[in-house]
Length: 135
Image 1 (tube, rainbow, N blue to C red):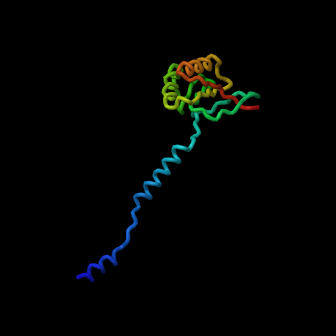
Image 2: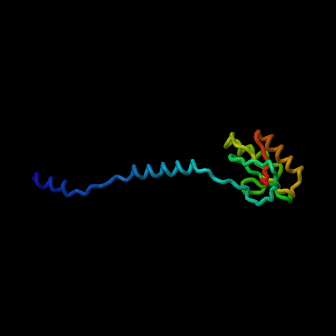
Image 3: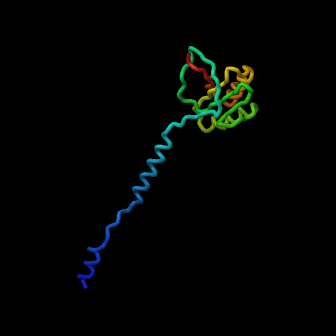
């Protein structure tokens, strides 16, 4: 009887527990997704004016585009100019350290640019910039 019992154990197949490996892979995946910086776009092409003193800004979280026909775009969708403040407040609440960059077309009206800039500042963002291309 003892022989039978020892033969069963010696013939048993060794199994590898894959659960810890799968957990580790998922943790690494989450880590890489969180640490990757994504390029944000406004969703429209804007012909920016050029400036000799333009400086590249690395951390811009909120991009607002103004087209020549007066359309205002945030996050690849057109919004009403009266809704700029609410959208910027919502996006600024997600990342309070972020800044706003306004991509105004060189053919757009200055009054609309000033209005959008004012709405961004009223939303609580202190760092508002206007995009330009370096000469």
